[in-house]
Image (cartoon, rainbow, N blue to C red):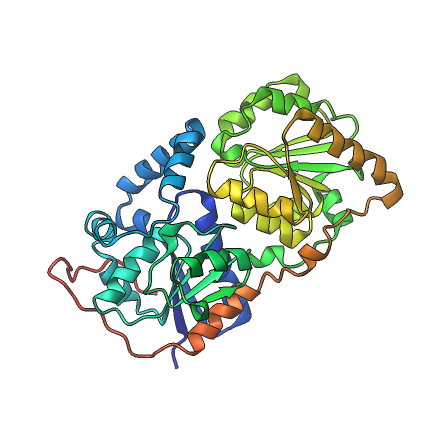
Length: 394
């Protein structure tokens, strides 16, 4: 008997959507040995030359003109992608999606971005008979996520579910699961062993994330942080932003035993485990990873739109605080330093709100959908489809 196949589709508009897809792929295989997964950034796979240009333009717009992005987000907030938009996406960017699905023969499709969700929804309208799960990767529900052909929406909070239902989604198709994170974030690591491995001192430690998009360029913000380098450890993660990392390495203030400048790493789960506080932009995935690790957060430079909604949720739950002035940083750092001797280095973990989050719930919900899915499926081919192989055989 062949393994059940789950195709996970995402897009590269920010790292969080694809991170969620890979997190689900790993956790599904962890929970069930009878599952085979495949993750595709659909646009990049079908258009490897065009897609990176589109994603780069998006990132530049978000970084340089966040207010413009926020205006567009809000102006379309309550609107689903209409038939014309879905058809345009299909014709211009995703015309070969049906062929990809036909070759991979999935038993279930999971989308972690609204664009592939809209395209698969359109294919279901014209004959595709494969169940579709859509995982919303923020603490908000923009109208672009909504398509009536989606069989199950997996959402972060009851409030997000209510927003979907206010837009016509039936309650039976909504399940509150939390946002999925990679199994690496499911269990804590030994802090003392990690400190020894990373060459860190047993002292208050702050992890700073968000440099991959050049979002740590605000000099006053960094100057405020580095003033504390004699009292606590600063771990500044700049991701793939090697230019930014080189600039900080050239600055004498950051060449200090208690300052660590990280490039790209696959061990953020471990760096979170040795940290007492996370300073980050309020992206849905990063916030949820911190939630899974039980680490309190300070938020800076929220992009208008979904990041503002994420920030609002975590503040309301007492899981984090926005940096609204330099005094916010000083107050949090002072509290961290003063409490550290009394706690003997044991991190002050988040309380009840964090304990209720189960990172495996989303994957279990997908397995439930899969267990009840129809076995037979078909795609009505159109004249635009070809028989040329797109996807290598597994």
